[in-house]
Length: 449
View 1 (cartoon, one colour):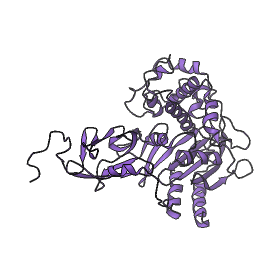
View 2 (tube, one colour):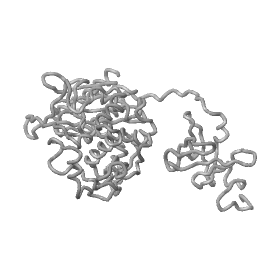
View 3 (cartoon, rainbow, N blue to C red):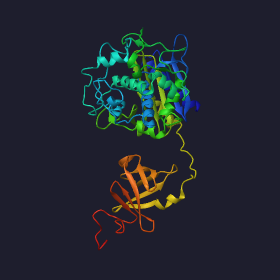
View 4 (tube, rainbow, N blue to C red):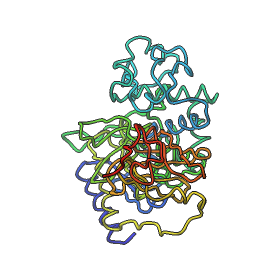
C-alpha cells in the first residue's frame, strides 16, 4: 500500500490502543486473498506483538464449526432442516433444526448451566447435555434471534458424531490444514499474548484465566494469529476458498437469516456468520470475546477487502468499529479496481433465450452470465431480479432474490422456438401478453386497442 495509506491505518490503530487502554492490539487489512497491511501497538511482554503472536479468537471459532457443518450438508450427510434429534438423539431440545442452531434461532439458552463457562474448566458432553435436561429451551425454536453459545457446543458434538472424531480434529483436517492455518490451536503455542483485564479507574492489569472449555469449546476455544486469521478473513470474503467450501455455500452462509437489532437492521446473522450493513456495504464475519481477549474479522465480498483486529483486553476496545474503519479507509484511500472485462466461453445455443421478455406488460432482460447462469431482471432495474443456473434441458433453478429456489422452465412452440418462460406459474413472453403463449386466464381476443 501507499506509505500515506499505511500511516493513516496505523494512526487509527494507535488511537484505539491508546484511547481504550488496550495492553496490546494487532490489526490487518486483507485484500486479494492475503494480508496487504498489518500494524501493532502496545507490548506483549517486552516486545511489540507481530503477525505471528497468538491471541484468543473467542466466538470466531463458531465460524469454523459452522463451515464444517456446511461441509456435511454439501456431502449429503444431513439437511439443514433436519431436527437435531435425527443426528444427535437423546437431548431435551432435539426438535430444533440444524439451521436454527447455526443461525441462533433455536431458542436454546445462551450459556451453559452452572458456573460461568468461559472462566471455569469445562466438562464433557454427557455432563453438558445432562445439565440441559430441563429448561434449556428459552424461546420457541425459530421465533427470534437469541444468541446461544450452548448451540455451538451442541454443533461441535454433532460434528464429532457424524465424523467419528472430535470437533477439533475435524477442523484441523478439513479446514485449518487445507487453508494453511498452522498457528491456530486450542491453547497458546509459542509466542502469545496473555489475557488481561484493565482496571476501569486506574491503569492496572489483572491476568484472566483461559481454561479448556470442554464440551463448550466449539463456542470459543481457539487461538490464532494475524497471519492465520488473515487467511480466514479472505476465505469468508470469498477469496481463495479452495476445496474447503464452494462459493455458493459461502454465499448461503453470508445471507442474513435473522436480525439482531431494530427493524431498520444493521446487524444480523446468517448460517454461522454475522451480516452487517455499513455505509452502503454488506459485510460478513464475526466478533469474538473471552476473558482477556477481544477479536473481530469482517470482509466485504463485493470488493474482496477485509480487516481483522485482535487485542488482549477483556473489554472497552471498539473492535467492530475499528474493523469497519480500516475497511472504509482502505477503500477510500486506495479503492479496489473492478476486474477487467474479458469475453467468456459460453454455450452459444443459449443465446436464443437471451434478450427481451415480458411479464404481462413489464419488460425484462434475460442475460447469459460468464458462469453459464442466466440473470433475469426488470429492464428499468426496479423490481424482482434473480439468477438461475441450469438443471437439465430447459429447466433452470433460481439462486437468489425473489425467485430463489423456484424453477424456470423454457416453453417452445411446435418448431422448437422459445416462446415463453414459466417461472413459478408466472408466464414471460417475447411480446406483452403474447396470445400464442399459455397466458393464465387467456388474452382478450380483440387484442390491444
